[in-house]
Amino acid sequence: MQQYQIPFMEIDVSKTRLSMEEVIRLFQFTENGVEDIVSGHSKSFKELHLDMDELTTNTLFTMVASHPTLLKRPIMMDGQQMQVGYHQEEIRSFLPRAERMHAREVISV
Image 1: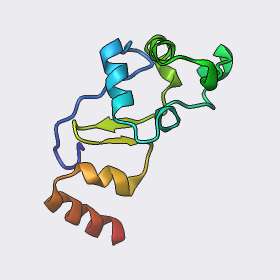
Image 2: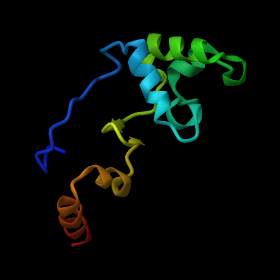
Image 3: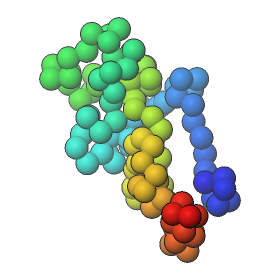
């Protein structure tokens, strides 16, 4: 984003607590639900001994708000789409079309 001078806001979830509204918004953008954004391999997940099948939606939201390191990272959102993880091709979809074409050329060189 910096390379293409696209404004963005970065939130370090290990230092900044997410509001319940922010957590709910994240889950609204998932396509496959919890598995899309909650890391079952994270230290927090293991320490909390969570069983995702037994959590209510409200409990899950509260847990993520209280322990944001349960989230997979990075998470990119633009109001229309969400991308989780470092998938270069999918991250490129956040660039304007002209920049996507240029980025593709630069990467394939």
